[in-house]
Image (cartoon, rainbow, N blue to C red):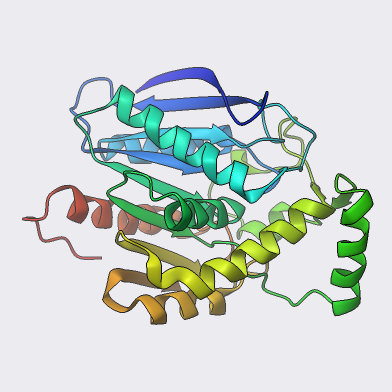
Length: 286
């Protein structure tokens, strides 16, 4: 496996950090542009990327603004529009680096929200979209008073940081990738700003309402026991899209299915579906 790293200029003066993993010998089948979740970074997916590379896929992972090695205050996205534009820029870079390969946009959790909004609003040149445990809606309903207060705070202090309350115990069941623990990882953080939370809340609801405009096939996977993002919201999207969406509901699955107890089976589901969309003549079982 070959690993490469580089940076590129995003919106404004944002410097965005990127990692790429690719097979060292086999010809790749396609490229996954990966958009990570809140408080983490692309390198948390290194073990997952290695599995995808073994299945002959290139993985290119972006550190979102305010995350990992990219610039910006921790946990702050100036706007979902900027974040979606950065995802589209990543797709463009992938196409330039691998012009002969199909490109897939892959988003997890907050990254699922960004990837979905990117696909709907900007329609980048991707073969298909993959969302795992997307933050379209939270698994719990924020109190109205909290949302009301947040909107007023955001008006004069948009960068006010709040704790996300996320820990490994809520992300996945123990037993697979201990290296994925966010505790002790210097590139992880537990902050989200008021404006970022409200922007993601609104853009998630917008994506649910407008998902029928999606122009590419969607693989949507969500754990039924997710304590962070709403499994029901993913069900709603799947119902509205019908045959355009392959929905996999994971019984007892937590938020990070790629790190959960059945991670290997999860990877097989993803790669089998990708294979179906790189060669339409093959028959793969999901």
